[in-house]
Structure formats: structure tokens, C-alpha cells
Image 1 (tube, one colour):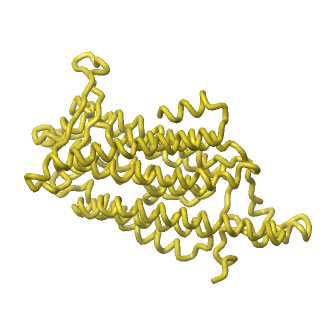
Image 2 (tube, one colour):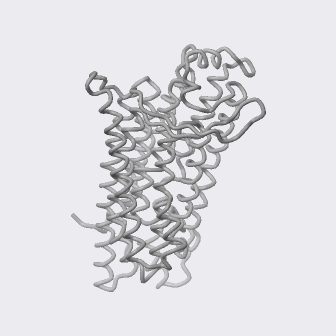
Image 3 (cartoon, helix red, strand yellow):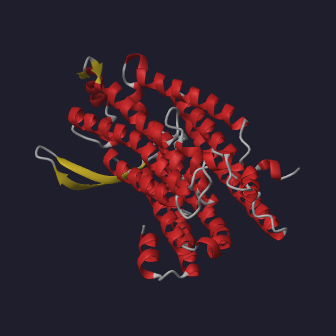
Length: 413
């Protein structure tokens, strides 16, 4: 967060200083996060409490009087948070280092190098704040910060335009036909439109999430995780009904609606493939360490609420939607030729697996896959970025400016 403010207001578009500050701040955040993670885990290591459900520490500050109570804001670290603090800043730091060189290749064409590192610094800060939040309201604030940053970063190259489907079908002249036939199809949209699509689609989920928070507040009088997960409180939420349905079930389904939007689950998955129009380091961030991981994290964090009612109806829906998404994403990915779209549909499928695991009670399996997926998907996107970079330079060397560098059919092999 500090790096974002300094880059925006203090560095006067100094490229090396902006990249250096962003990478340095992320390295410092990684070191600090690892120290916190290891200290929390070490507290229980001697007692052989190696499970993810271990006690940590909590910092609470009274924030807002609500008439009959005081709303507290704070941060909490437990075993699950410790795992996320190990992964998120480390992967973000590696992507920042990669981006510091990758984005230099596009500085002459698009510019805004310093602004890019300001945006990604805020993006990473939002994810870290979400992970350590001890209540749903602070989590929602971080959730919205990431939504804003995704809009800014997906549409970062807002000058780029692709021909419409009508222009591809009926080019004005033979030269234009030669330009269109191989490069752009009707499935490509301009980055500014892709950003708007992602922003509006995820807002549907955000409205559902906020509605679930309001329902929980009205029924429980608190949004703090520890208070919500007290056995007496969970029993109360399972007994109180709205339209004959337990509040726990309704609020869990609404919260899951937010996760469906953020983690690109069916039917709100449509924004993620088009999000590939942003720079490749942005794709790596969104798919690995930050945005889409947030939805899975939210469901895993709220799992006691999902599981409290008889038959766990909310968990059944999590499993069903996750299974549909996993099969659908993998099937659609088979038919793609764009290397980044293949990885995008792979991400959708893997997120579906995580949701399905959580839905059938496989908490450890779901979050373990969340951890491993962050590393291998970041590597896949950075590898694809290197290939795209090489394809662009190769095409430029032979004066071929119409070949799509992301089309796998042009890559040989």
C-alpha cells in the first residue's frame, strides 16, 4: 500500500525507482509474512499440532459504534492464514521481478511503466489485507480493492483494438483481409472492454456477498470470524429462519455467490478468459496469487457456516457448482488455440476442483491444491509470456506484423 502511494505521488514516473520500490516492498512483505507464518506454526510444533486449524493471534481495534454495540476491526493469523501468508507475497514478489523486465519491452509502444507497478502493488496489498482480515467487512474492503485493480490492470493497454466480427467477415479490401484472417477472430475483445466485462461480472457476485454480510449482521450482530464460529452462535444461525430457510444456509449461499464471481465459477466464469487481454504478469497475478484465489479462500474461511445446518445444503451447492465448472473449463480449454486462453480455462477447471473438494468436506485437499496451483500456474503464465515475447520479436524480425503471437498454431514444434 505504501509502495503504491509513493510510486503514484513521489517518484515522478521514474521507471527504475518504481520497479525497484515495488519489488523491494514485496520482498520485505514476504520476509515479514514468513516470520509471522513460521512463528504461528512454531507455537504448536512442539505439541505436534500440525493441522491447519491452529490458534494464532488477533489484533482488534474498536472502530464504529452501531448504537447497541461497537464494530471492531482487526487482523488475525491462524494456521490457514499462515499458509496463505507463505504463498501470496512470495509468488507476488517473483511475478514483480519477472514484470520488471517483461514490461520494458512494451514501454516504447504503450508507456505507463511506473503506473503498472503502482497498480500491482495495490493489487498485492489488497490480497494480503484480505488474508489477514479478522472480519467480513474488512475482507470485503480488500475484496473491492482487488476488483478495482483488476479493472485497471486488465484494461492497462486500453489503446489496443481488434476488428469486430463483422469487419473480419467482410474486410474492406484485400490487404485488410490478409491482416484479419490470421490474427483476430470474433472471440477477441479490446482490453478496455475486457476490463469492463470483468468488473461488471464480478460486481454481481459482490452484491450477493454484501447481501450475505447484511443478513449475518442482522441475525448475529457481528461479522468477526471468531464470534461467528462460536458453537452457540452457529447453532443460533441454524435455528433462526428467513422464509422458512435457516439464516446460516441463506447467508452461506449468498457468500458463495460472491466466491462464484471472484473465482470464475459457473455461470459467472465468462470474464476470466477475456481477462487475458491484460499484460501477461497481470494474468499470472490474477490466476495464481491474488484475485481468483480469493473466492476459494472465502469459502474455506467460512466453511463452519456452510456446514452447520442439517444436510449442509450450501456445501452441496458448492460441490455441484465446482464439479460443473471443473468439467466445463477443461472441456472448453481443449478447443482453444490462444496459449493464454488455454491456461485461463485450465484455471477455471482447477478452481472448480478446489470448490468441489471444499463442498464434499475435503478442506485440506482444497486448500492444498490452492497452494500448489498458485505456484505452477504462475510459472505457466510466465513461461507463456516468454514465448509470446519471443514470437513477437521473431515476427518483427521478418517484418510480419499480422501473425498472432499467442496462437499456438503459429509456434511450430
